[in-house]
Length: 428
Image (cartoon, rainbow, N blue to C red; front, side):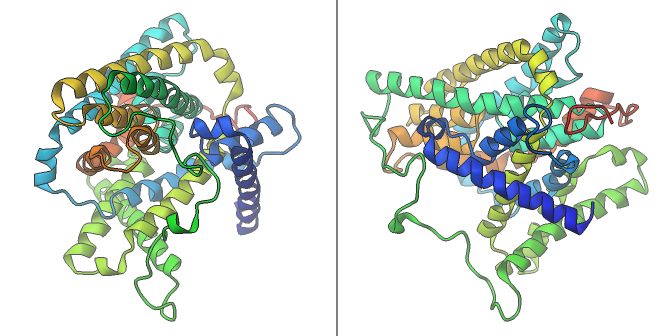
């Protein structure tokens, strides 16, 4: 890949990103499902690409974006992470419920996926393990785990993971809104009795001036260095540190070579952030802006991953995928609402909505569901989830480790690589 070809790829990505955004702005039902513009743009490009209409030629390099970009995306998650013991104890009830969802999706997902593979023997190995990455992790973690499976010779799991993540977003909002209306009628909601009373800009459109917030704050003069350049340098340095650490460990333990770029990003982010805090350099780090960079890269990953979905694989196994989604949806809802009702002392319904939305879609979905019953942001449910995310940030490493374990067991030996599918669906 040359610099010119990379630039041309980014131009194509930008065009479909804008197209997806405007489609989302115009088609109101799409907004109410909280489908991101990058996903919509990717689906449009998929429909126009070689696998369907053949109007647009999808570059083969699109299939490689997730493998490369997932490291800085996950490295950004570790910037700004601090753990407060008092908050952990205060929010322990919610943390236990959310982690129960994660554990159920990990264990039952892998087992149920293997069971379905008995009836549909062509399903790729380890596909059921994509549950917790696709549902609770969303498209970002689905891309991370899928990239690892691709490195291990099972590229099909990336396509399955992206489809599961999309289905998860849809059922999170559809089932979530049904539960919202049931809860409001039964008096479970603490703050509101009308879940439909939302401002015009809740689902989309331009934010009014008074609600527009800065994406970050400059930390030094632009005469010295551009703010984007400085924060981007911190993020990429984190990737370098993680990669260097893996290489150094590899001098003594060859098995570490199977650890994918996902782990490099997480390790690097933790190293750079904590070292910067130790030597008082964190004053030059704008955590909010680094998250914005990560968000931009994630949009690129989602769009390119959707464009390169293996349609032949998905159409062949759509029935087990739907069955899998239905079962995991019901169990996730059961754990969230029964668990929060039993163990959460206050605001159990708001916490259950947060846990369910995040457990089947992503954090934004959970926040959206909570906001329908808490328009004034008085609930502690978002804070509970924020503490949970900080305390359990280490579980992001599973996106790199679980695929390795599924393919090789606990022994860290890479199996023989299988041929990967290109963006057109052919074997390469």
